[in-house]
Amino acid sequence: MRVATLSTSVHPGAGIASQPKIGARAPLGGSIVQNVLNALDETKAEDIISIDLRGKTALADEMIIATGRSTVHVGAVADKAIKALKEAGVSARVEGLPQCDWVLIDAGDIIVHIFRPEVRQFYNLEKMWGGDRPVEMRLV
Image (cartoon, rainbow, N blue to C red; front, side, top):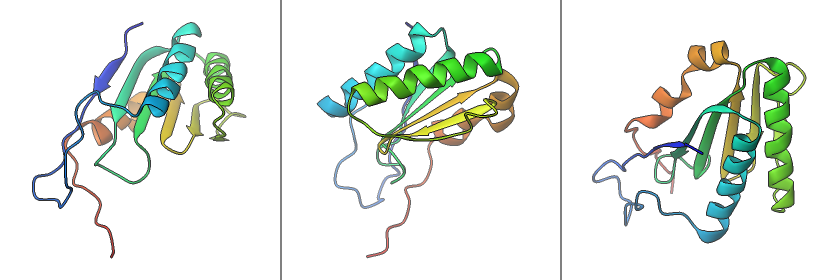
């Protein structure tokens, strides 16, 4: 399985004590991410990308993006990813299953996007989240 990993860096002076190491994951979170990646691979999802969001946003720690060849394929890939999360004991909110153009699976620290090719190209989340982005400001 080939998974592209986009890593990011924390903006210098952003007030974060330490920068996360590239590729470092918490043991439980890493195994859940790996289970989802394996599920995507088993269902022949294409262009699978994992983006480390730690230090970038409070939304999640990891974002996984994949492509399905058709709406039927997107639905099948999403179902397998949801089952992988459930088997790991993680509940997830799911949006977009009826249409299957873009399915969003929000599992807390892990967000999975599964697109049809045209929809993925239009939204281009890799560009939005893959580059250096400023760290969110936190109100104290």
